[in-house]
Length: 492
Length: 92
Image 1 (cartoon, rainbow over the protein chains, first blue to last red):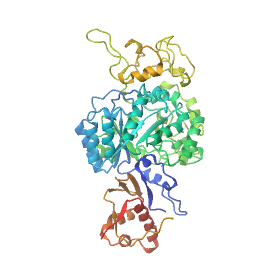
Image 2: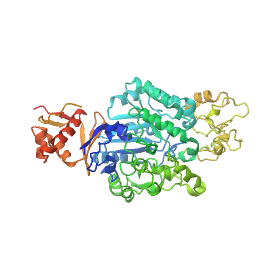
Image 3: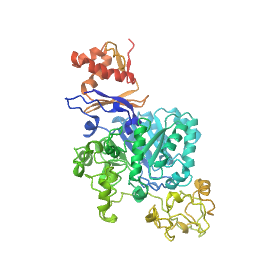
């Protein structure tokens, strides 16, 4: 039996993408203690802590795992956030993943970043790049305690902006250019794998290489607004295989957030811990201080406590009833008799929960096909599927102006209406028939079969009232040029 | 195979390394390289922490109760830690 696991980078740990060294060589007949077995009983402090600093966001990505958009007035204050950092330092949480919302839109973001790194809490933050000017990039490149992760969900503007909103592709690439120019090495290019972008894996790798970044691929979960688009966006079964083969072929070159362990049921274990770390090695602190078992499980069912309560984060982590329960050995339930249970462990808890499947059964994307069967046989959607707790999505309707004048376009947050139709039909190049061609507006007939179920539904939860707020909901000054480019002459 | 680890040298933790004890052993984190190591054994933790108090790694192991039979195993673990800069040689 080995005495230690060889060192790995933290990013790799979070993703645990390491070559075979990760797993100690079994030393029969002594029972080998795999790390994964040790971790199942939890740790004194998390290894991978995600902290979403704000629900405010300049974008409205259709698959946002935290249903972000608007700031929550109960958000932790600067002083409260610093107190959390002090606590993380005491608990020796070496490193925290900061996200949101868009964390950099908090006016005290840079102050908190400096505070954390001055207190031995390293930071990796996820951003769409909106605030990463050349000056900020230079500042970040100088701080070895900071790592940056740029989100991009398409290797082309068409595919990316389809889910992340007009202009977001250009914003992300500009940010990467700025980081690269500032000499920042190995920052992350983070991609949520979807049906639309799986064919672009090589292109993503090329983009990452171009900017000296490291590619990180993660799984689309049906969490937050992701639940609304999951049916349309999650990879098809044959794409899962394509993704798996790609990951195997690029072992050691790409990070995964350990998020594809359900794919190991193809028969080969992917590098990584291959463990649902919820409440054991990972957890989430949300903007109002609520502590959830994992970033993809923002629901009362997985709420362990709040950092504002007596005893703070440490007490929640170490003593909450929920986390204690998650650290008990889990039964395989319906999966126990499957040959692959030992590697896939039944897959992702959040994915099961938000698709209405039992937690002790197969993952909805189980590669052995057991999840699909269950999905077909589950109760009607409304009954079966839990809704995430809290929704901070942008409102899609702007109120009337006090002076009675018409509401102008181009102000306020980018508001995105989901386009109907499939990707093959985009970009919409001709708006002659109707200025809103291609957008999912209730009164328009479905123009294609794929994704047709979503047509007529505003994915951001408002009444599909886009057209009434100034003719077209694709407003937002930042997005205007890209918008024009993407839609040709749609006239807005 | 890497060269055999020389147990008869004085070692210490790299100044940028932080140690977090855990029920199963410990986590080591190097703020410079951003690497993390898992010590899967409390004895190894004791050895690592007591390195500065001993003239050699071998002496630190012996003081922690590591017998000759297990010495190569500990030497191998310490060697891994040194190669990843978690441990550095102490100058006199």
